[in-house]
Each structure stands twice: as structure tokens, then as C-alpha cells.
Length: 309
Image (cartoon, rainbow, N blue to C red; front, side, top):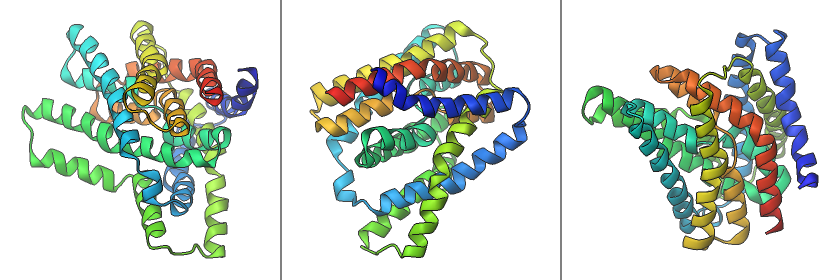
């Protein structure tokens, strides 16, 4: 595990550097917002397009993989929802807490880190995990919150969900890349060099942005945040492990990537949704802060375990 910890340490050191920049005031909240926007819309999109353009959908899309990840994730989603409802929380709050329990930082942290630690072959499975998170669970939280507030389901909700997916650059870049691959079009050298240079900024930029954004997070409501962090870092990868290895017998390498992706800390976009809808943003903020700090140890342990399997 020590060897894996030392390999993951530079990634978390970049997060720490960003955190220092944010806490010290060297990087303002506005600067962090613009850096995040650059990574989200440009650098990470270039990386995902370049990776997916060199993959074929037939090679990447494994329905047993999708089913295994969905089953494991849905199980913990339901557990977190049940615990929230037992505490007499509203449907909106339960939806946000469930999102914290299962949605990891796959885009900003998982894609660059797992590709480097587990090999570029990990990119395909990671992108499937990312797509399921965004399409299924990213849509579900919008449907639950909007439906609970309106008191009914409507076509307007589905329209909001659809537009949200169409405007998400990660989904768009993956779809365009796979489309490019399906047409069997070669990537011209100047275009490939452009995507390589721009995509290379994704890893340091994303990690620095994660740290800088954590500097503005608070650690209030530690008990609830601790439960949500435990759900994300321990229960979620455990459920995905059982689903992938026992229920659906996913191919070993793909299963190891799925489990590693499930072990990642709570994603920053959960906070963005919580803030947008005005539902428990401080609770989500604390869960992101605690889970990211704890993941220095837990993610290293999970990657060390799947690497030996």
C-alpha cells in the first residue's frame, strides 16, 4: 500500500496546494470559479474527447459492467435515502444526501488519476462510470427535488433534465469522441497536438481547483457529514465490489477500475446542485471536505487492493 500511497500523494499534494492558495487568499473565490470553468469546459473536455475518439463504443460499452455499477450505486443510494427519511428529512434533503453518498469526483480526480495509476485502458470504464453518474443519478436528483416542490411530475422536469445533459461538456465531449471513433476518422496531427496540449492542463488544473474550492467549504454538522463520507468512501465501493465480483461477474480489470472509481470522495458538483436548489449546501460542503481529506488514505488502500487482485 505504501507504494500506491506514494503514487497518489502527488495528486493530493496538488489538491493541498490549491487549498493553501484558497485559504491564504492568494487565489480568490472568483479566480477559483474561473479556473474551474476553464478545466470543466476546455481542458477536461479536450482530454475526454481525445480519449473517447480513440475508443470504440463496442469495446467500451459492457452492459454487465453498467448493470453492476448501477446495482451497487442504487443500493447505497436507497440506504442513504432511507436513513435521511428516518431522520424525518424532506424528500429534497434526502435526495441531496443520497447524492453525496454515491457521486464521486470521477471527472476532475478519477479520470486523470486512474488513467495514470491503472493505465490508459482504465479510461473506458471510468467514462462509463462518469456517464452513469451524470445521466442516471444527475437526472434523478433534479427529478426528485423539482417533483417534490411541484407536487407532481411534468414534461417541464424532463425538459430541464434533457437540457442539463445537453449542456454538460463532459457528456458532450464523450459522445462526440465516440462518434468520431465510430466514423473511423483519423485525428489530424495538428488537432491531436492541440487536444494533447489542452488536455494536459486538465490534471493539474482540476486538482488545484478542487483544493481551492475546498478552502471555502465549512465543516459544520460533522456527525451527518461523517456518515455521508463513510457512505461514499466505504459503503459505496463495498456495494460495487459485491455487485461487480459476485452478482454480475464483471471482467477483473474493468471491475477493479469500477471499484476504484466508486471509492473517490464526494464530487464538487453535488455542492453546486445543493447551492442551486438551496438544499443543505453546508451539509454537502462538510461532506466534500471530510471525504476528500479521508480519501488520501482510503483511496490509496482501495487502489492498492484492486491492483493486487
